[in-house]
Every structure is written in structure tokens, then in C-alpha cells.
Length: 556
Image (cartoon, rainbow, N blue to C red; front, side):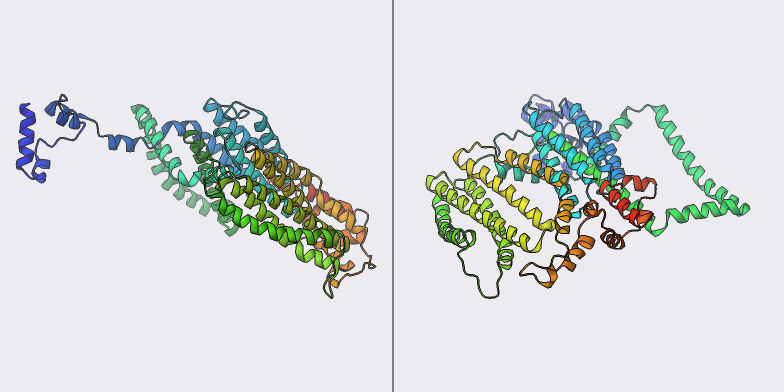
């Protein structure tokens, strides 16, 4: 108590600066503070307590996380860069995906988890994700269609993030909006944990250093000292030997010219960058999901007054019903009168994309109204009407496109949009079912349906069938309503310049077309598959098959 009174009187009668410089100004949490002030009173307890701010700050780095995921992230980065650097459609893609899945399984195993089971111990959907990712990866090296390669990349990225969320987070109560936010938040994990890899690595190195004995530290310092002495000597010796022997000098000079040639130095920079961001991506996503998961509001409804939704959906329903009547009696039953100088094909092409846009808008409308407004039977009924009218719009879009194809034949885009119309029809069906049963798993069913349909579409080799269909009409000029840009010459131009190499097997036997296609190839036919490591990485089955057929025509 005497010590306590002394401290109290001193602080009351002296300035803060004097106190801080005095012998009484002990650092909180130190042994001196505990000894001087004691711990049996409130004042002493404060000084006796450890400095929690500093302790918490020191604990921000996660040594255990780096010990678990650091090596795995580095292996992933090297494998990712080797397989996919400057190569998005080569034979290494399925091997990359297989390796990625193995590394994710390794990371899960270190946490006592399995890649085959989700957070709730179920395996069915996990197996579906794994099979789908492998099939999509295989499709990357079996097609040369740029559009399909781009869609493959988007689908694989979306499925990987969806798979990770499914494994690490309990998503049973999520609706489709929750899933969208969950995937978006997972994709943002690298930014929310931006500095984690460096901080955790520094803490891990420090922890290793504290455990290192004096002999190991001395050996490391000896190696550093040796390098400091050896590198300058190496430069001197190389310079002397180069001046002594012309062959050695030319070899050294050409080697350094190769390394620092403009293209190669940029490749080195790009490869280094790809390795670094791959480490960052893998480490932050896996650590972030395992440590913190994702916080998504699973509340199905925001609770807004449904009268707001009833009002604007009522207005839309009036317009949609009127439009639907016109489509049924005018377009489907053929009782409309077109404006002057209009053909049915031109009319069909003009309205297709607008109707597709409105159909997509209605999908979003039904989804958002379910989430934002309180339950209302009237609103549900109106949304059902919107859904039924949307089906008529989808049917109108499909009918228009079929009319257009009948006049101007097939292209990849025309086939793809027909496939997409089927997809959004099923998506809309799931949304309407969720109006009746709110527990209906819209996202999972949509994900499974779209994935299966897309895998079937890409492996069907659409460009081959498009070319086979169009070749039947090459030279046909009897169709009414044709304009110059859809002439037989234009169709030939499409088949030899615009369509991908997936279509070349359909031209087998047509030497004229194959020669024209070969002349339009951007790369040399003979150099494309010259055997080397880079060529093996970029080997694509569709390209190889096309080059082989074209080279046979040229006698190569």
C-alpha cells in the first residue's frame, strides 16, 4: 500500500513528462511493474497485465497456416505456370486440373477434411464437381473454337469457386442470390487477405530461426560469406577465360544474348509474375475459406412492402400479355402483315436479341422479387404470369432464329443461342417452382443442368456439324430473300475463314475448300507441330487433326 500511495501522490503532483522519465514509469506487463506495484489491487493489476495490444498485433501472422499451405501453394504455382503459361487450349490443361484437385485434396487432408465430402459429410455433389471439371478441362484441348475455349475458361473458373464454397461453407440455406454473393466473396479473398502470404512466411521463417541451433546459423552465415567472396571471383575468372579462348567466349556471349533477348526477358518476367500471383491466389483462398469461411446473409426476404412489387409487375404483365397475344396470332399462326420491304427472315433477325434481353431481365426480376419483398400470394401470381409470358418470348425468339437459319443457314452463334434458349427455359422452370416451394434448390439444379448441357454441347463438336450442314447448300442460289452478304460466296468465306478448325474434318474430300482454309491459316502448317517441349504443352487434338488433313491436300 505504501508503494501504491507513493505512485499515486507522484502522478498527482508531477507532469506526465516527469513521470514518464522517472523510475516509476515501468512498461506494463514487465517483471519490474509486477514487482513494484503488486497484483492485489486494481492499479497494480493494470501494470501487471501483459501488453495485449502488442501481443494481438504479433499474433496476426499465422505460422500454422503457412506450415500447412505454403508448400502446397508453391507447388500449385509452378504447376499452374508450367501447364498454362501462354497456353489455354493445350493438352496440359487436363493435367493441370488433375494436379489442382490433388493439391486441394492435400490441403483439405491437412485440415482433417476430404475433398470428396462437403461440410455436411455428403459426397454426391463433390463427385459431380470433380468429374465436370475434368471433362471441361479435357474439352479445352479437343476444340479449336475460340468461343468455346473462352466459355470453357469461364465455366471452369465458376465451377472451381463454387466447388470450394460448397466444401468449406454450409450452403443449405442459401438461395441463388446467396450463392452469387458467396462466389463473389470467395473470388475477393485474395484481396481481403492481400498481405497474408508474406506475413505468414516471415513469421514462419522467424519461428524456424528461433529453433535453429548455433551451428546451423554459423553454417548459413558461412555459405553467405562464401557467395560474397566467390561471385566477384567468378566474374573475374570468366572474363579471363573468355579472353583466352574464342570458342568459350562465343558460347558465353550467345548464352547471355539468348537469355536477355527482348522476347525471352519478357517471358521470364511474365513467368515470374504468374508464379507469384498463383501462390497468392491459392494460399489466400484456401486459408481464407478454412479459417473464416464466408459470411452471407441467408435471410430469404428483405421484408420490403410487396405492394411495390405488385404495382410494377402488374404494369409489366399488361404489356407482356398484349405482346404475347401478338406473337401467338401473328408470328406463330402467320396472320400478321409485315411492313413493306420486310421478309420474314429479316423480321425474325431484327427482334431476336431484344426478346432474349427481355427474357433474361425477367429471370432477374423473378429472382429479386422473391428475395426483396414479403410473402404475397398476389405477387407470386403476377410473377407466375411474368414467367408464362417469358416462355412465349423464348418461344418467339427460337421461332425467329429457326426462320433465320432456314434462310441464311447455320453459324456457331446461331446454334449457340438456340442452346442458350433451352438453358434459360429450364432455369425459368426452376425459378417458378421455387415460387411454390421456397426450399427448392434453384442454384444447385441450375448449376448441374447448365454444366451437363454445356459439356454435351462442347463434346458434340458443333462446328463440325455446322460445316456439314452448310456444305449441303454451298452453291445453292435458289433461296428467296437472299442478299449479297449471304450469298454462296459469303458462305464459302465463312467456311474457310471464320469457322474454327473443328470444322475441317467435315470438308474432307473437298480439296478446294481445304486449300483455301490452309491458305488462310495464320501459322505455318509445317512449323506448327515441330516436336519440342513448347509444342507438346500446346498440343491440341482438333488443330492436329485439321493440319493433318490440310497437309495431305498439299502433299506434305
